[in-house]
Amino acid sequence: MNAPLKGKLVRTRWLAACLIVAVGLGFAGPASASSSAKGRLVKTNGHSLYLRCAGTGSPVVMLEAGFGDWSRGWKAVLGRSTQVGTTVCAYDRRGLGKSDAYTGTRKIAEVVSDLHELVGAAKLRGPYVLAGASIGGLITRSYARSYPKQVAGMVLFDSVPDDWDQYLGMSVMSGDSENLDIAAAATRLRASDKLGKKPLAVLQAGDESYLEQLVQRSDFLDYWNPSQQKLARLSKNSVFALATGQPHWIQQAAPKLSAEAIRLVVASVRSGKPLPTCAKSKLPKLGAACQ
Image (cartoon, rainbow, N blue to C red; front, side):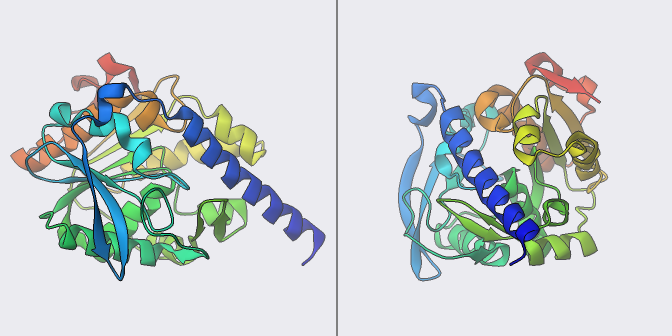
């Protein structure tokens, strides 16, 4: 391995590990947030995955955590299932949280397969509203590409763009808790990824200083900001907002805003009506800026 590549890999592993630490430190939902959430282990693809659900109704909202994180990162959102107005579920990917242990590198396609088998085994009826944070956005988009009829809408929280592997010059995100090979999934999404008119809400963090410092590239904001707005163009029925002053882990730092973004998509799915513009929604009152 040449020196520049070795240095890049070391920096990438350090970046991933720091993201995991940051998510853990940022996790501070109110004590009541998980009081109504019920957890269970579900046999999936020969192993057990931990699933937590709160609320009732359809469509079911499935929450996909960021890199190295699990259902704990959605604690505050799960606690606002009444605000969302439907069943809200989060799970632990294999090797994380209370799910079965795993060592090695997994491809996004394997995670998507697990999620598909999980919702079936847990008897959660689709189509679903998928909500993905950070790397979870790649997973939810990959799920929608593989199972388009099972996805009714989507919410992306400061989601990793589908050229993240090219930007960082690496294909595997490695950390103490998780190793994910994102290259194949990212390539597929770059080739074809459209949600048609399915409702899509995109929230970008207003404070990207943490990611900017980790990546340590002067062009980071020039890359990240337009990439976030580009995500909103995946659907002809979308709303984009900036979570003013909030860090990368929006769903933890601004749970009311996050729950409202999900509620907007759920309402659009139920009514069949287009999403409101950002300015005409409740997002600005909850701390979002319309772009």
